[in-house]
Image (tube, rainbow, N blue to C red):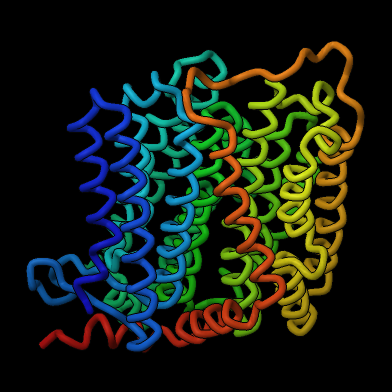
Length: 502
């Protein structure tokens, strides 16, 4: 089953290449994109089943045994993340059939989208810290290309902020890798974990750990360098915004979980205490930013920031229950946040604006869309019996059990303010009458010949996932519990990767 580890990377690379070769035919690109997304999802599910059965699935590229060659590793956390990547790929591929303009399709929309998916999957599956940097750069190139499609002024301004902060993150990341390699002489993450446990220069280890925290914190849009996200995510095509919202920041969160449970776990009193307060400020600043906004996607963008804080809180508390809560929260949030961005695109398609003051009347004219909005919106706010309630409940209970009462109180307050933002969107866009100056239905984001009904398909599917997790969360909790057990016992990961070394 080890060969299945590479498939989630290979499939989107092949799909993107084929889309590039057929760039003259938009119809063929759509077919290839949809086929590739489904194949990615199927391969990721098979990989998840293999990990569930075996614990870890490892492949040595070129038969160079670790730590001398490139290693791909799937544990439960990475397998879960790859499955979620496949799910979001299918959802966005379906949505793009009706939302992507023909002009965007001709200028590389589908090749860039699948290159981005390959970068995301590679980041989740690599067992080499330098290759994690490489996959981050693949994501950055692809995401920048997607962000500037159309070349509008707002897009270019957002893209400049986006790429500038991410290049800063990459520079810090690469510098940290250089220092780490100089200290331990290896790039394989399992081997690094072993040698850091034997290293005597603990001061330098803490410095390198903080550098990784800053680099991944920027990627995850954590406090204080998060402002690039709400300045850029709302500027691109809505399908691109949804893909970014669901996956890109979670790669940064995944990297934090990986390095601070596997590599930098020698001094948790320092590293995880720092993570704890960064999580609190990330939650608070993100939700306050959202409360001040009146643009649909900007509100959702600021809420990405605030929700990242909950995931970091699970890691920072560093107890088995807290890690379960963090992983559960990641699964819930990817689905919910992607869905909310897709719904914002439908409202824009109907009324031609994202400005809440210019929206209205959707509950009366589109009651089904209104219900579909309420499901992820109330889940994001943490209302029972939806997935967000259980995600927040686990993290908050872990905080109380760990005695982190101040940060737990912040998490509860942020939940209430999140509910306020969702009610604001509901009241302005869905409940109040349509403003008199708004003139009917507008087709936005370029010319597309596909019907509006296609946009509802991924929204319904993702809403069904949210309801399933809320009403039947035991299987999802068990996956998160399995993942947490592995993360809290890094020795199993180390033995799986280095077990084949002479």
